[in-house]
Amino acid sequence: MMPAKFSEPQIQFKLSSSSQADAKNRTPTYHRIPSVGTAFWLSACETPNRDLLKLLRSWILILVLSGTLILQAQSPLVSTITVIGEAITFQRANTTQEYSLSVNAIAPFGIGDTVRTGSNGRILIELSADASILLLPDSTFTIDDFRLDEDGITQFSGELQGIALHQLEQEELTYQLTAGDVSLTVSAPANFGAWNSDTNFDTITVETGEVTVTDGETDYTLLARDGISPQLDQDIIALDDLLHPVQISRQTALCDGVVSTNGGLGLRLRAGAALDYSVANILQDGDPVQIIGTTDNGLWYRIPSVTSYGWIFSNLIEATCEDLPTFEDLYRETPARINNVTELELDFLLPYYGSPEDNIGFYR
Image (cartoon, rainbow, N blue to C red; front, side, top):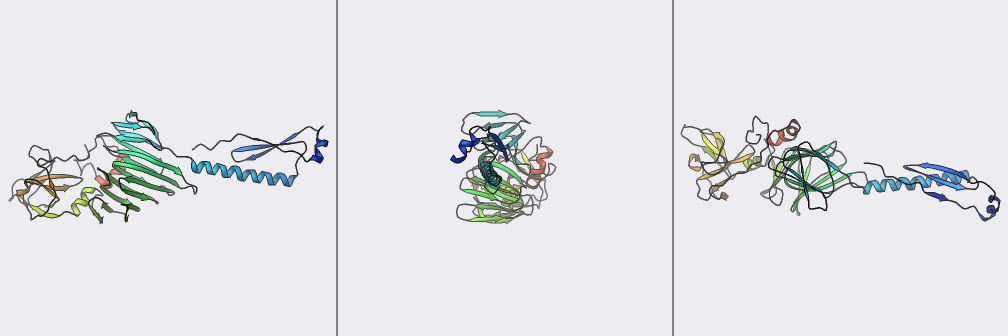
């Protein structure tokens, strides 16, 4: 951030009445007093008292330094965005026009600005050298506030619609993110992910550090490898696998079952509740499954799989399930996916989505 600039004011001092007459025929001398960010000039017909000059210099230094700190504390900060995946639109504060940004484009990103990613769009938001956010496809991010407070602490607040993975290693940073009635706050280094597909946060998971989640009534403190789904369950879940919302669904499934094909061919897990949907995975006879939903006609079960959901024939599952959430017949999943992942992104993605070799449904 550029330092505040000051002009050099001309401060005129009058001599006492007793010395004004003696000073009429004298040539004025000028005294330059250096200070922080500026300098002051004193003009007089004779040199001021040395003690007075020292006192005046100290007073001016205090005023200028205080003014500089106040201006810095009130000055907004600006982050930068780097486009990684295509289909990005950018909207400046207090405007309605959106601009398209191409891959590898870099742009300033400040208070009131909004950025949106398309079906394969990804953006790196850099708040500082030690604080970055990876915004995944079909997401929107807006900066509400970003500035230094009077104690030199960076204050940031924003709004999310979609998916954002965070690496916040900056020490003096207070970070707040809001989605509907739910907000999260980080006041110390932390790495975490946030998912929001509707109004409030769907899920928040923490890789390292500590994150406080507030729903307007209660505060929840999440530590490393904790997760919570504010809209589904108020309990904090200790995750034993990937830090992804699907894994919370798996660990809190309402019903357990077992694949039963009588030793036959594998059971196809499909991307929707119909035979013409693509195959997402193949389950073997005897594999355990966690059932979290069914279609209205009861012919298909919904189960979690890595970082997405799939559908299998219910009559090939041994299970006794009651009061399962129901979905319309022929329901189709729309999981997040990315093409041409970069090494920079993998550093963010691995704790939440695993490796490309282990999650071919996400990495394309």
